[in-house]
Image (tube, rainbow, N blue to C red):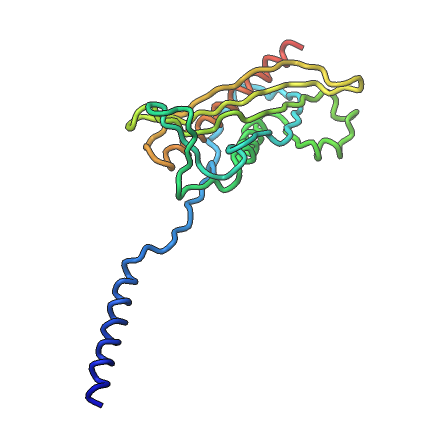
Length: 216
């Protein structure tokens, strides 16, 4: 009985030590999920409404790392050819899908914006003229120019077409490159900078569409 007591005390001490160590072991953390948040407020109306040509906006194309959900960044002051990912930060959906949704919401404030599936269900004769905007996402990253200064960089390849019975007519093609200033030098700041860049791209596209309409 006396011999068993030291063994029992040793076992109890070992279990207590393991329990104490367990409190210092880091538990796996879930990645923080980001989206682009609410839309900015609409500006005050500036006169009579001007009906605009409806827009078909298919899914945005992208390749490689841009088709995943990690929040990406570059160290421009060190090696701007290396695309890195924040370890514990993720987009709630792949950037092409988030950018598409944001552009549709922004552009939809001044004209009907439809997916290809929605347009297929419409009577084209009743709709009349329509634009088709194809977009390819080429860059979508948080870029550090210095450890204390960074920006969100978005680059889109845009092709604007006018569908017709005789084929699609090319109305224009351009590269849209915009930036947003990051308020903080971390993933959260990068997300806000990229959201601002996406809104700037929407404004750029809206202006472009208005110019094309004026020239037709």
